[in-house]
Image (cartoon, rainbow, N blue to C red):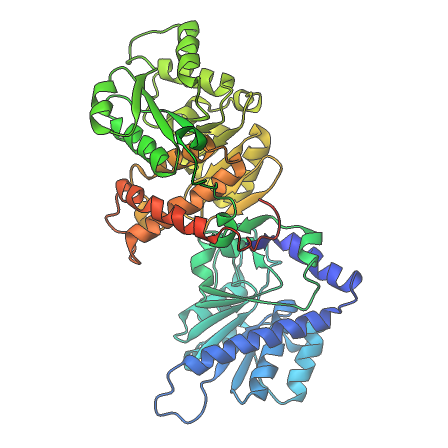
Length: 536
């Protein structure tokens, strides 16, 4: 699995490489630029040549800092390889600083084609030049940018975006927030990004994923252990790393070996949520699944499931049940179970909300908490924090916003940061659903899931995830491991069901059919090493 770093961590990485290991910044810049030039040479070689005898030209737009310095190194190596280059300086030539100034001096001494594009008056000429370049390289801003892009730099990025050639960003697209993946006003739209040293958080989260295009990681030549010494913000999940956390399936096992999941879900008009969650528990490998639904939905649910036992727990709306009676029913149902999943389709009336709060606060079973149960917990972190067993919370952005009293926009603006903060405050594993689902643990560990597609943005998909996570918990998988395996398998099932398409028309039940195959594939990876930078 791949570590993801923030801008602050990358800054410390560069400083430590120099101060701890004696690798000068000029060497890091050389390694970055040379590696990027190799990637760009490959891209240039793949471009159609047509009737032209000369290689396609590469245009670079360079800023005054280290990102621009990387660009000067790239230009030098491309020129040495016989590829025509044209460098546009986004700053007055006498204002380059540090190692970038030294590499600009080398480019000038080599006689590379350099143009001053630092003034608005240069924009018409710049646009014409970029329109003629087969490849446009963005070396304007690096990971240090943390403010809105305005004025002339904004117009430079817009000019690069308007160019018809293949677009390549160095380290990170200019204007992309390295910590959140959000554009800072305007952002370079890359077809390829060559990033240095470590993958940046912003390249793994939406919309940064689309804005970065295909990503290549270039080694800077620092010791491999440096990333671990500095630490990382999150880890990008991969198949081999997830497979190491899939529960074993002993040949001599029986139903009890694989656990008993209790699903609390469904009400009149929302029986589908209950059925999907329960069936996902079965498909994820739980030995037994019991579905406890509301009184007004029991007959409907019972007619739709075969492999699941059905009981009544919550009363129909309007029917009051004392806390003591609910506790007795819960204790009877929970006996012999190894985990529970609560919330999908239960309803938001006060009777349901109070019952769900009691279950979350008091149950000694590991719980997946979703949907209406999350709504019932809004503003009540103490109920989860003081719970006697682990809790895995699975909100979508709207549910998380309600839980903590903020807006969806604020959640989406920093998905990783918000998920980590809630996990820490609520002392629970948080699964923040959506494109590039984030998994966060109370101890600060966090993971980003790359599987899944837009077709999964449909009713019932979240209920399937709840059942998968519950089934894994029932098989006695540790909560954080269950969350990582569950979100990967859920997304991978969606990808298989989509068959390489955009997922248009995908239904939640399609995931159920693909899930066993995904889990079998993961099980086949066991014993081959996780490729992980650290334990999940």
